[in-house]
Image (cartoon, rainbow, N blue to C red; front, side):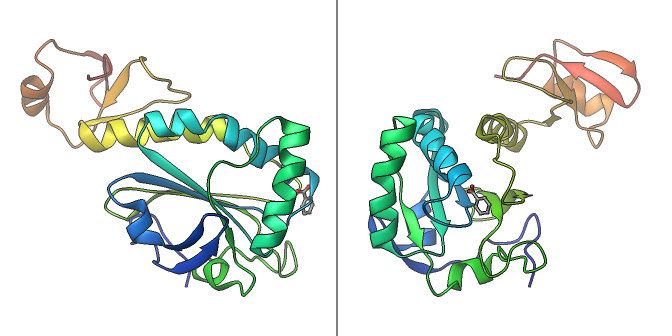
Length: 210
Ligand code: BEZ
């Protein structure tokens, strides 16, 4: 069945390049980015996996663990890692799930046969410490993802989980936020005593809460 935002991310046990993991236990109290790619030894995937290794410290700063997946076996993932290091300057420094039996891909509905026969498409799931799915992306094989956007979205997810705000178009760390419409002006006065700028009664801007 398709996964929807707010669902509990399916748990699983899987072989990875860093040993066997039980997914929920592996996430622990962290956030998680689970991303699939179609196949080992393919060009777009090579660039994506190298880039994720490069920006892993940015995910760590945010308390996010990252984990990749494809339907090839561990031996293939490990061999391919050498090519990723050679061409991208970074070898994967995070686990890659070897989903040869497509167990995880099926659980997460990552195989879209009308787009790509029996291989996983480029899915991204951001999962919270409560193991709920917070964000999903699906890209076709031919289009590499923008993982900087995932970092930006994680910043928004973590901020909006803590404060009664939403983030506007193209928002980045440090920029003004929007007071959520469900918060009345009376309640907003308690939460944002320094006030806000109301462009419309429903569009109230505040500095990013600390
Ligand atoms: C790639 O990663 O380059 C790729 C994988 C499958 C189909 C097309 C491109």
